[in-house]
Length: 392
Ligand SMILES: [Zn+2]
Image 1 (cartoon, protein in one colour):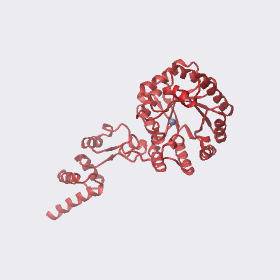
Image 2 (tube, helix red, strand yellow):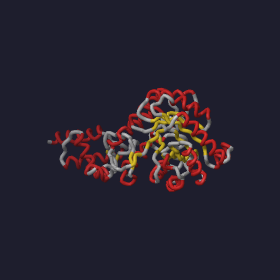
Image 3 (cartoon, rainbow, N blue to C red):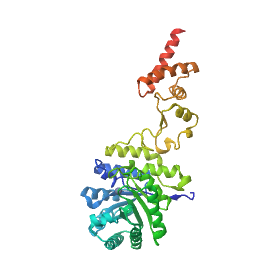
Image 4 (tube, rainbow, N blue to C red):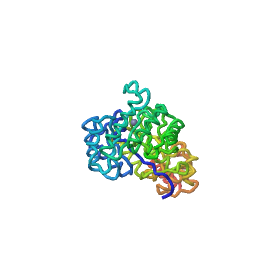
């Protein structure tokens, strides 16, 4: 291996993703997704929130009992009952992780928890200690960290690492951060928390401003070692950091980030399609990496360039993320080179003159029809060849 840092991918499709309005999954579907995540090569599967419902408990328990090859995490609030219930669901896992969270921002302290800063620290330490009694692998999340005063956040992070947390997650729970802001939060923790080296810092960014992927990457640049994300970016409200985007950003720009992940990128599209089918949440056509148009080119200049050398207009190869091949969409913006190429693929060897005539007819048809498929093109060619025969 090279000197690239390997970033842990913590997938929360089955927990935060399942909280997407309209995306609940049944038990069987959760098992299918868990298998797909194992195949994809994620490091951690957050399987659910065991105390939230009997269904959640059962899903976490069954995934813990039956799936190997990734750590299995269960979420719990920072109290004994939640932590005990989470451990009960996780205890048979090959590699269990208890994930405890408590809000740290002033607004959550005052209005939601009615707790003083000192009480927050006391509770956080007690929660980590209780989880640690069950399991060495404990993650602590400082909910709403992005809106927490930096001095206080440093104190909480130091205290929970001191209590034994092996991962400390820094969530932008409400999707408020910007990349420079999130980068500065992680840098501040790396610089100021004396025992920061004893734990992995993690990001969990929401996408309310469309910045979840950018914010996660900004944290990675400053030394964070884990990203929490979901397939297709599903999750509460506008969703979470999208797994496929953040993974391919680090891989495609490894020259810049000097990072990679253990993800088998060729399974990104099949996994995206599985999650979309199960949740009923469509993937937008122009979505980066996995959208239907992500590797489709229609403009003539682009199609011509693509046929000469794919890297003229593509920074990734479609087959590397699990698409069959680049899709040169034939429409009114398409050029002669793409049409000639398509005719060849359809099995027709045409002269330059025949291509010239075909291109004219193709443009006429494209004006009246939005997308032209292979059978339309074959039809135009057959007609031209037939009329040539009858003239001869
Ligand atoms: Zn979340």
